[in-house]
Image (tube, rainbow, N blue to C red; front, side, top):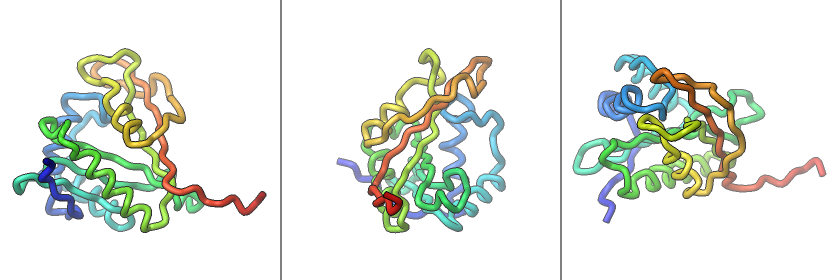
Length: 179
């Protein structure tokens, strides 16, 4: 049973969210961020996201155990029906269905906003190692995302190169009025 609740994040959640994120910055190549952002920087990131997109947290027993948010895809007006998604869970929270629950809630909110194209930018190992596996790619594929592109050796962390892949999920096909 998944006794996790999902709610909208606030800037006051930044410290708990940053604690989760810090694990990934320090110990993985899941994020290509190398230096830890400050609490103030993270609060500004959350506030900036909330001006236009949903930012959700998952709570178990009163503790934030994961978060997911959407952001602009490319940042041009013609892409307003598209969004890039991000998700992080506390390491011990994996395998409990929390990631699926967060993404499902995020997709529902984005759909109501008229966003139909979802994208995920995912670190991908050239060869799986102790810092990066194919788990993120597999998670997204399990939720209906399809791999659409690879950028080779574009990230460097822990003195090794990593690829970056893009995955997409189309919530609703919009009729093409040009045909």
